[in-house]
Length: 332
Image 1 (cartoon, helix red, strand yellow):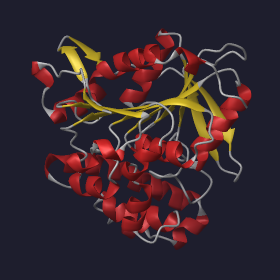
Image 2 (image 1 turned 90 degrees about the vertical axis):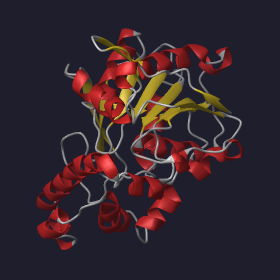
Image 3 (image 1 turned 45 degrees about the horizontal axis):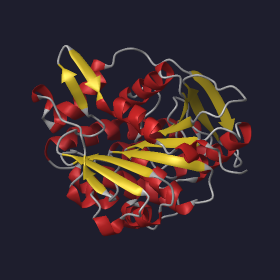
């Protein structure tokens, strides 16, 4: 189902770039969380950030959050959502993708838009720990596209519902869009982080030096170049186009079997309208809410002196809208 969103951008923040940038500068408070390191079967690790550690008992939902490209618990949307859910007495945990928590991961491979194994391992681990707690997932941007891959490729996982926000469901088109106009500012911001983390990993892991020189890393100028030279060869893809084709979430939407809410703004400066699915491309379990404005993971409203964060309000309504029977955990 595709419907018009009830989000309305205020007069002072109708511009897509203001919607995208302002929330980052308006959220100055530090993130409050409890850290946990989860060891992975292949010898690597992921770091978790809990807004409040759940009790062993209870049957209230546990929300699992997945951040965007080069994001972390300090990203404005992540720390804001964790704090909002804590105020609502909703337990939540954010999974840092490998290498995104401030410490390089142990292996050369890191993460990408279709890397589902770590998320699947975390979801199974949480279900084992808290078998009576329904698991719900929220993914932003790259984390949202990854979550679509999880839902479509791992239908056996103990997930009861999902929300996907500002996801780049057509990776090739998004890699081109972010290289045009003012959006190049976002591309360079992300590339600084990607190049910096890769340089650190090169110094940390001796065999990383066999793959790239410092000069090669510093010469990467676009996200497509990074995916061609780093993401694809490290993770078993022939090239960037092969990676984009195999991991884009749009073709997978018709295979989703649990209630899933997609939130997207038409003016998202990270992507074009090719990411917006047609009615025949989504399963009956998917609801897409489209708004004219909102930018990329923005959706700011209220007044300039008292801004409000519509995504957090929408999450609260999403939790309240869940059918009664979905509050029961699935069988182990």
